[in-house]
Image (tube, rainbow, N blue to C red; front, side, top):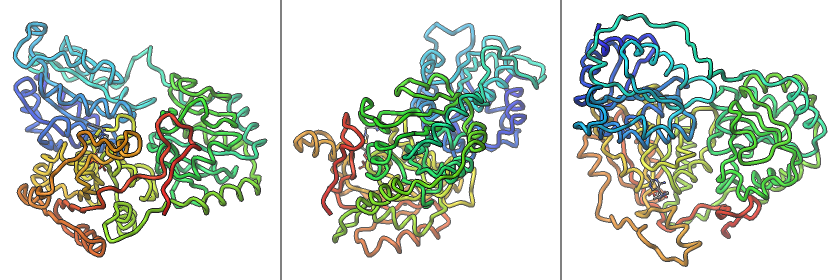
Length: 554
Ligand SMILES: Cc1ncc(C[n+]2csc(CCOP(=O)(O)OP(=O)(O)O)c2C)c(N)n1
């Protein structure tokens, strides 16, 4: 059969149900083969959105997402999507068309060296130079993307490879001598960690996205309850423990709650699980958790000691390591520490000033009240931080956000991906007006395929987070952050695409508008005209330590 037919058959064997993408000349054979397949292809309106959708699909399900693009501009349009998935360790396979082998290096029409371009932002990538390698490569790509520390894998497919005759002999074994992720933690290290925890008077668990990726939230919650220890998460770790759990402190870092930040700073033992200590989480790293011995559990040995010195490193899968660790722990209440943390929780709750304008935090609180089980995606900026602060996530894979790369334009196509995987779930993209405009064309895709996501725009007519930095740290010199679009109507734009649009200007209308939107069986865009100058607090300024937090008087 044609290489193209073999690819599609291989995808079927891998259990792929949905692909997001856009065709073109170099990948047309694969699309031709797809025509006869049961796999559902969703034609997005931009390749960046196709990759974000595959990524959102992967984050919501835990299964590998798949995106297609043609050569040249199609391939280069995937770059931001791939880098976004790479930074957040999301398993996706991206297949790109390439010019025929004889033309590679000729500056042929729509030629781009996409394996060269994506080398630093993929877990692995392939240019298929021999059609006899094709099926082995597809098999390896799915294996590499989804095992160990997950990540994006790209396969570049020269057009003549997709036309060439191949025999369909899909391998069932993988031989990658240089790639053997380590899953079980070292028993001696686990014992050492348990000894430290047993002696600790102020233990805190710091959970990252790795807990979500390894489906270890049950084990993590059990560990917290067994010690007992408070749990703070990174942004990516939201959902590692239900945020309504009495031991949850929510997320930590630049816009984390004061009580979470203080608890980390005062901890005497920090149990860091599946976390890479990004600067947004640690604040000034030299003053991060200064009183703590640090236990670091991570599947990627390259993360151990990368940003923070650790006392007990454990390389392994979070789920397996936690299961073992729990066996060595006996419950011991730490009354003094509990009183201290509960004191902070009482003294420094997340709060905002309510007045006659719509407060963005209020909108999020209402979303949470009305749809606590919804899958939430976010854009990037203030909207993302308010969503992280005020939407209490109750399970892993419920909160989908671009943490590492901070990609504006991610949330909406990621919501499309999540909704494609879970058509019966409410999926809400919490957006800023700037971010939503970066992939707004996907409204056409949503309408086309009946992907009924809800977009909640916290419209401040600013690139709000940058404006906030300018207000606080650049003497109110508002350089290029005002979007000046009072006249622009997201409601009409949505309607122009065939979706439902709404505009809301009064706090008293917020709840009814959300209720109505959640009932409508169509893609809905709600333009909430929020208080334009609202800032995100608390805030740890860039370069400050986690306890050097600024807050507003309420
Ligand atoms: C693709 C991209 N370009 C630029 C930035 C830098 N940036 C971070 S937040 C932000 C403002 C976002 O504005 P908006 O989407 O309106 O959200 P708000 O902060 O107002 O909630 C910008 C420009 C980014 N994160 N991503």
